[in-house]
Length: 232
Image (tube, rainbow, N blue to C red):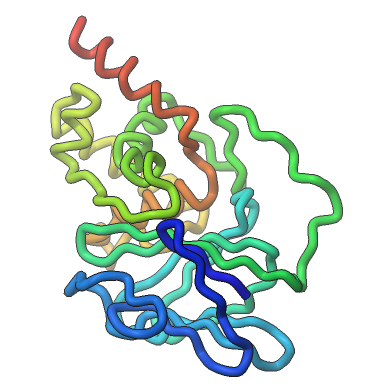
């Protein structure tokens, strides 16, 4: 098993656990919001496993095409069955992305992945309006621009300014997007009844990037939207 983070490659041995966090073989950084031991890669029962050994943070796991996705909550584990697996997680204001490469995958696709056209949704029947897509792009822009590294998710005020929108309009549409994805089973976008999750912007970005709900090729739409807003 190989692990890639920020252009650096690490070999994961099948006879000992590989820890990801503030300490361990992959010492990410000194982010105080990140667990010392957050994720653990290990090999047993004939499979590679990814386990969340932290107590607060969750991770989004997906295949490269975004056809399948899982939310790895504290205490949960799942097998790494694909040849390439994308892992995204957020600690405080920072979102991280890494990749696991398995040279002996359990799951292999039976046909080549179809080329996706811009705007095509790959998970479930979820479709976004143009303004909803712009909102998600504005939040996901730093991650889409820096794939394979770290990024800071914009605040709602920063994302609204990027689009030339009023903050009230942005927040209203953010509510709508989160509610729509929640209805289709995307976890982590709502809290208790009547309360939206504090970290919903980060969770929304993780889901959108992992599932290819938005892709880097769509980023020019942001400048076009800002230009139109300034003209209006």
